[in-house]
Image 1 (cartoon, rainbow, N blue to C red):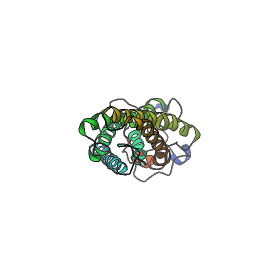
Image 2 (image 1 turned 180 degrees about the vertical axis):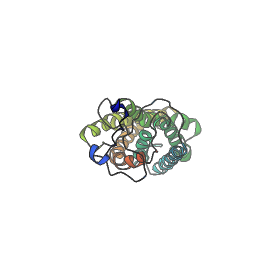
Image 3 (image 1 turned 90 degrees about the vertical axis):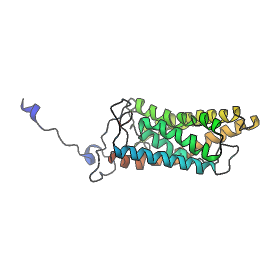
Image 4 (image 1 turned 45 degrees about the vertical axis):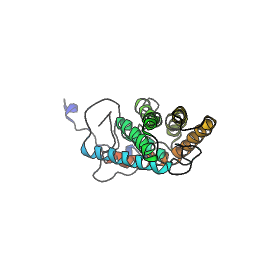
Length: 234
């Protein structure tokens, strides 16, 4: 009976989780469980964070496509993807909103893509952003890695990042995006493979460099201030 009334021991972040960065005063604990269950709606702070992420990804997508590329709709340096994948992993089900608005508006309409092309073209980021988010939510615990990629600079975390958020999804996203441009008459057939290889390789490099740094360094801060989405939408 006495044991059941004892107060639970306090978690000492510095002692129990030595790999974690130091605690930020007045912030959330870093020992957070993630899932993809629907448990309600986000609070105001989380909604603001999602809105900011959506705006940033949209503007970066537009700016990235203002750089000259091998074919229309393919950037020579698509810096936006390096931000988009961490945003998706942090914000759970809202990744679908961030991905589609960013690609449909930023990489589509704002970049001069006709609306009928931009509508299916926007779905390319469902592959590049949302699949990594889902794989992290459903498989991270099973493979012993952090569900928001904070351990990306460990061997296991980096391999998981490569296989779930970098290589396959960017290759498939590039294939889908260039296929849409081809069938919609925005890309000549003889440029299809050039566009696909350019899209995939650039995105892989950008994700490896920018995405990994954001996950490892900014992710713990976003989490501590209670801004990450812990379930499907909250």
